[in-house]
Image (tube, rainbow, N blue to C red):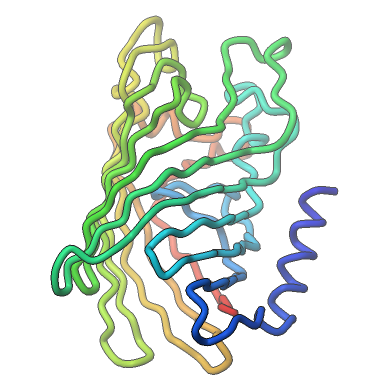
Length: 271
């Protein structure tokens, strides 16, 4: 029911007129909604290659402070319940807030806090040794025109369900190059590094051995009238065999590898 309510709200928001704020107001409220052929997060499909409806709302102040909420349907937690412990969970909600500003000229910065929340039923009685996927990250980024370098640091002991993984991090280097006033070229490289030890891939072994990996993305987006954007991108991952095994959905017919090279299409609207 909660998932259906969120989807209905996103659709209604996309069709509704934007919130009116006085031109001289220091406050800005914006929204977005998009339909994707699948949801890719750090190189991994979160919806088992099924479509995803996503959207959110953002508040910003002229001082540089901002806060927002974003959501998407997911399936990765219930696709492999024996591995994740989730008997029901079909939604990801992200809550974030931070501060951004200019250092000098075209150089800027962005610092903040982001909470990944996965509502649903996590049953440790049936699936012992599994942990909730909710994760809190502290992030900081440096920007220059269309380039950004971002570091996200987990301050949770159970990062995305991996036990004893406090201090795990993600490094994201992204370019959004404006080739024309409507066409934007996208390139990205990311490094996921898990810290600590657990029983994830053997008794008391480093999480890095089977959870860390690199990912990449190349694509493009094209701006249309009325705030619409269409686009597509290729994504993939670089993993060892142990890491591929960890990110393979064994419960799915054909044992689907979540980090397989793939193409995603989307249409989105800002308002």
